[in-house]
Length: 165
Image 1 (cartoon, one colour):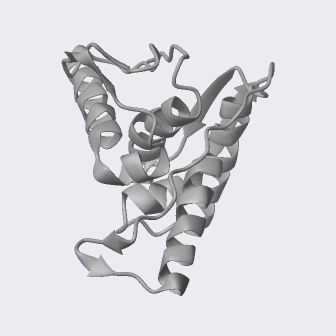
Image 2: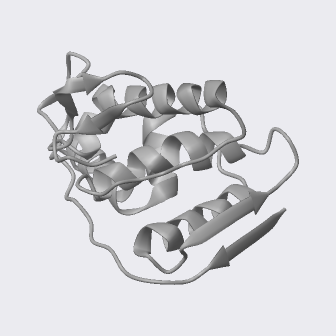
């Protein structure tokens, strides 16, 4: 796997929502509630915990850590362009084209984000998938102040309540 990047600027973060008194109708102990708050804080602050929170079946491997570190440099503005080269089925699309845009939008809801791919159908699919992540209950737990704008929910053209996408 190869990562290539180039440098520039800096960014800030949004705070996560505190844990509710219950989860899925079950009462949480104070320790479980504290653990949930920590998981949400970690998901808002770092990319791999966000992936794990919004995709519970995800198991991080060493190459995922390398990809996540590179994507976090992009989020911080230290890397202006990033290309990820890895064999098929190494989670490039899931991390770079679905989860990262959703996490980035949560941290910078007012910003504009452009992702590219080789074809319109795939771009539409990625746009729809990111939109669905942003609409999810898990996302709302991490970034409670970020929702889709009421008048923009199309898969290929949508924005947040803060004007970003």
